[in-house]
Image 1 (cartoon, helix red, strand yellow):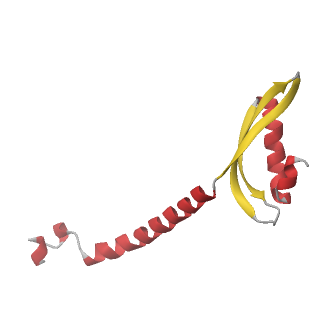
Image 2 (image 1 turned 180 degrees about the vertical axis):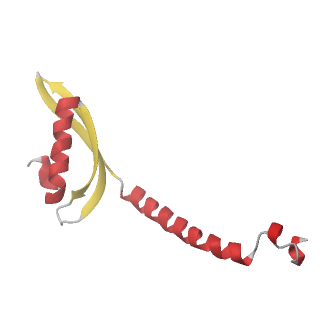
Image 3 (image 1 turned 90 degrees about the vertical axis):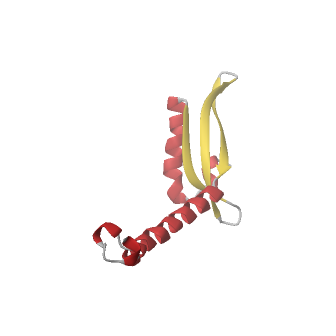
Length: 107
């Protein structure tokens, strides 16, 4: 099997470019979904480094499942959106005292 067989067709060209970059530059990385046997995709962070083995240039690399990080980032963005929407409402309910000296709580 070729490493590209584990990726969707749309992800193969950028991955092939990163593999070529390893052999040209010496190292590279990529974030792409890895396709499982059942067809599901899991986001991964891949690194690759060029090494020489018995005089032949080879690629050594590893992949890390980053699905937990992706879920955390999505949760953070959703939380920020909720608070971003809540702040203007709070500002309307609790006006700035500098401009509302007539309110009892601002005296």
